[in-house]
Length: 199
Length: 199
Image 1 (cartoon, each protein chain N blue to C red):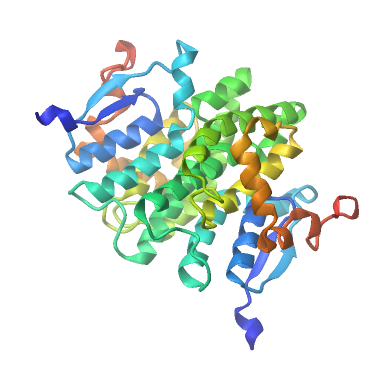
Image 2: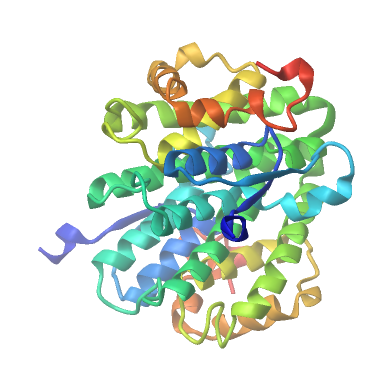
């Protein structure tokens, strides 16, 4: 009976959108099943997935509203606006430019392309986080902004961005990766993680 | 004294982000000053503008909250979620891929690139709008979704997307362009519109 309402995540181990949702599930203590979608092989499977980037932020907001557990959007209006701003900068301003669907179109230049846009995105993000951060992106409570940040830093590293240039981003990412919800949801330990990428 | 609080819009006649804010000002009856930023000449001016895409959606939400006038986010939770979904699909899923900063990087292929991503975006958007639309994007009240839609259709036309393939998008755009707030904010009649593009 319990399984009737167990959500199913159709995702990909390395997709930042899937990872965002996995973190939110883990923070909220929601049990779920995973159905891997291979975004590289079988182009047909990708079609439904192209707009997952923005949908994952919507879904995290939905989860936050309907599931008990830690608030992912702060009650305080100013902090709430800061969380939304940081989440949107990442989810609209950086991630769409380096998602798989886009870089496949870019082709041979994809490493340089992704590096460029993530680097410019971090140049905008670093001074904002310097203002808003406490232990985490906005003050000392985990929020949707943290859920967006960690997968973006993972992508930055994949595309050889020197994250050390962004001390606040680097510090927050390290602190967040110590938290269980971010560990269990990490791309290195998902059902569809290839053996050579396993932690 | 009144001028002390008159907002200043730093924008560009043809930017969808500037246009979103102009529409929201017009709907809310807010008087404002415009300071044109030339996004083509003088690369330096653009730096601050690269992340305006997501900021314009944030700003429209802020305006909605703090200024009297029509609600740009419906009170009904389901409709509110639909408005956010449509706005985010456009502002995160389509617009970032064809903004000026990105297509300058794409270079010679920019027309084909933008056409491709807007077309794919509209393929996802059309069936959603078919479900949610009344007179406007979500039911019969103007919302943030409409503010995002109209500038995106304008861009689609610039990049030779056949909007006639998307009957709901086409109908909504036509209905919205009849409304005064969308007319006065149109890129064809702004202080920095070049003479040859004036209506």
